[in-house]
Image (cartoon, rainbow, N blue to C red; front, side):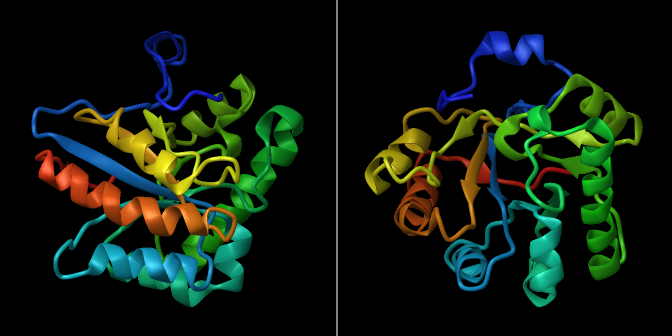
Length: 212
């Protein structure tokens, strides 16, 4: 999926997935994929916690990163953010056997449970690529498949920081689910675009909420 704003036809064809959360309150949903990562995730948390901002977001975490950096994962939870499963090893569903994919999902679920004392009902497939068989089994387990309305492309080294910001600013609407990445690869774009996006969205009257 290479488009910045997910088109209406895709949302209709894959209506079992959550692409946006329509509301009349001008709420939008910041989400962060691929953490927790030292320095990067911590900077994101500092930015969201800033007294001027105090924003809550949703973090889709990789199980292996939770295992390596449990203290950062616990900070995400302790600061009131929502968490979701992003597989243990960032697997691409289209290229992975369904049983293997589910086992990897369960490994991440175990890390979330072990380090938070609770389960999540949110899942975002890495790369946005998931087989119907995988999706069906996860939804049967009670998970919501969370996709996005806007992807910033902060992870793409060909995307400038300015473009990353405009991807959000030019496409946002009430109910938008916006994807950033708290990863080393995305860090340069993220550090520029996230504060500017937050400032601009607030000036436009948007509020921020978590996905639950």
